[in-house]
Image (cartoon, rainbow, N blue to C red; front, side, top):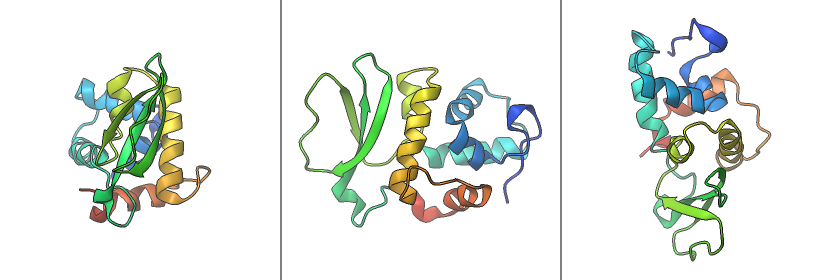
Length: 152
């Protein structure tokens, strides 16, 4: 059971909805501290841990990596799920790889990047729900973060 936010422009949303609609705000709030109080603070801490270690949605996830791609100016461009043994990207774009999907990656490369997070969520919907146009309802968001099988 997720507690609804009762303040600001995200009032009425639960934290899983917030993370999937405005991840930049979620990570900013966690860095600031004190934005989420009481049960929201407890839930936010749990969600933060999960958001940094999302399992790759493939059979044999250890054979795959998440490859993050940033433009030469450092702005987030996309992520791809690639075979672990695929050669690394060559070119002017900057890349990084990890064994899990980390929602905090965009925030870690650029302190404020709303457009980067829009691209990130679009890629997330494509790889994890089969369509970049998937509508992420409250139920879908909560069920994803409630399932321990989605995290390492």
